[in-house]
Image (cartoon, rainbow, N blue to C red):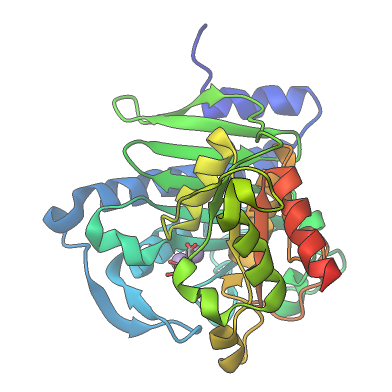
Length: 336
Ligand code: AHG
Ligand code: MN
Ligand code: MN
């Protein structure tokens, strides 16, 4: 089969009635920025990109050099295209409007520029996650933060790039979830898996077990039953994986199935937060990708993509992956 580049894929999707030229160009610009991030991460110590930046972000988290570099690459790449009205990033308190020097477009871009920061310095996969929304009609020149506060079902595109042993782009524009592999020699993303489907059933779960004693009762019971395995109510043994880069954990699930969770816990509650993962930059785009691949994504009580955001940096509990397992976790929460 002749290789299909991201460019060709987007043009053919458009001809089939999915997406439009503006959206296609926007996605290509994001993908190009991610190639630069891939090059930067790939240089490691030789590029001087490892270690702390010495600054903190709006979430009160210490920034790594690569968090800052990736954020700058994405902002710079997306400034001039004319497709966007503004960008919002996990690393910035307020959305960044498109500079006056450039024309403005009808889309809003949100991103987690570098996901899995704790893994940068130890050479474990990290990634970028992004989400595209339409700017609501009838707004004046300056973009207001409230324009971003749309539920995940309004996303027109979402994707992630994994910077791993190879660099992969996973993309949905609401018509399936597709995987592209970066051909490093040619410098282009090539379609390597069309319509990825997450197996409905799984015997593999992903969670940070060190938080177990801080979890709420339904999560304790649910994981407790997974651990009892064959002898318990679930009637089979479960395996566990936890990369601590959401992109890598989600990508494993997209490839061979699985269940990912970052539940609410008392440590998170003590910080006055509603979860660990960010709704707009992590939970929503991943939920869109996973649902388009036949999986499910829930807060334990509600479909993630139906959560009405109250603020840009809002956090939520996340349960996603193989459908039957997400439903099982929801049952434990409903019974509580
Ligand atoms: P980020 O690096 O963008 O802050 O995100 C890290 C997230 C996510 O990628 C991962 O699943 C989770 O935090 C890991 O959390 P723990 O270190 O608590 O396991
Ligand atoms: Mn992240
Ligand atoms: Mn991040």
